Length: 282
Image (cartoon, rainbow, N blue to C red):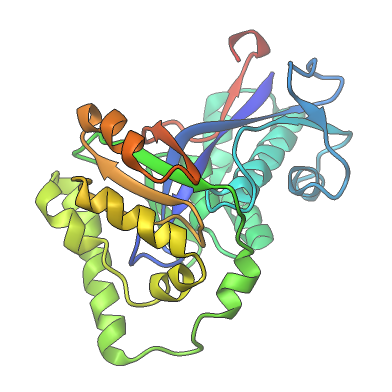
């Protein structure tokens, strides 16, 4: 048995530290000796975020990890592998029963959020779908749309700590109201299937301008995607990856026109979250 965990895109524009979306790009985490490591997996050292989370959750032994999620690019690598380590510890102690795993999710989320410093990425990777989180709680948002999620991943990385350090210590009342309204509109539009409202709903005044100023290629890619007909788009997490939503049939064309300085991936919203799988199905 092993744990499969989705990548995530956080913030979704205005929902800073409050919204996360699970994506169909997955990391696999297993316990050395309990399951054979598959091809392209590697045994991680004790400082790896998956291993730290595994030990914090009471796990014993070593982990192997297989992950195509790029680190430092804004696709929730650390959140995903930390969730993977925590669920692996649960598997070691309690087995693969899905009902028991479901009941343990609140405690798992609390530990993952503590290790991450915020809950948005970890909540999406643990629960799947679109997740709103605040005050230690996380709730999946019902979705009336099933879009493609096109991500554009540049070759350079971004430090989340450095990026957060450049954000202002306070914001004006008007900007706070602007983001509260956009976040509410975004959740409502996705739940209602109101695609026409998504462009306005993903506008932001809290963090994206500061972060995009550090990554001109990301700003260019985001604007290109919107100009080419994406429903909406945002800087994924702290960047430098950008993510956009569009109709399924439009995704290949949109991905093909984004700048050659990065790699485009056509993904979907992962609806499962962290799951325990037999290795033969991986």
